[in-house]
Image (tube, rainbow, N blue to C red; front, side, top):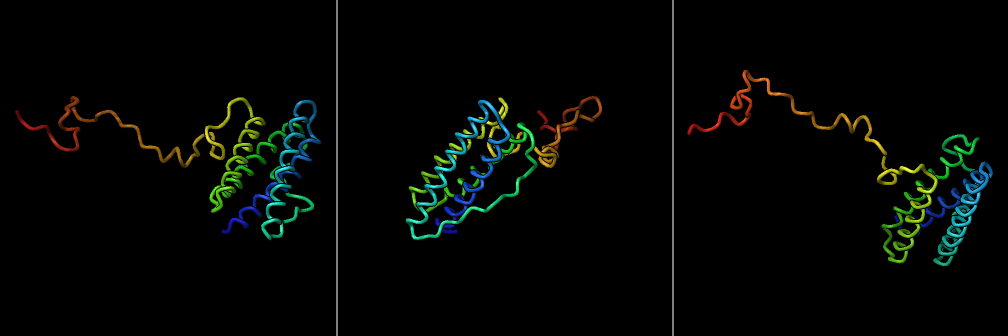
Length: 173
């Protein structure tokens, strides 16, 4: 994948973020609405910058869609907050892909943008964030079953250490 392809993907993700924050802001009030407005503005600015970079590089910037499919219904403030965190996670993933660009200036832009998305995403979450953005907070059931079994008590008679040692009995003195 070329650097231009990666930029186009990030631009498409920023288009979706601008759309989503329009919906998010409509469902919130007070300080949360102000937070959504600030995020909307930040993503719009970043989108416009990416659009200009692609055009200046001779590419045709990907256009926004007239609407986007949401990952879940957004009908209450709690849904809007959850969507905002989701949007920032998705953008972090898009910028993570751009970090592998050949151009060092693009890698820097991607790293800084990803940092902003992660920080903004944390601001939408409860006080106890996940250890690593994009990773599940708790191990999945399959990961839990892959854990090594706890050693069982020695089943040998009278607790004889020699009979429980898989390498055999200790050498005689």
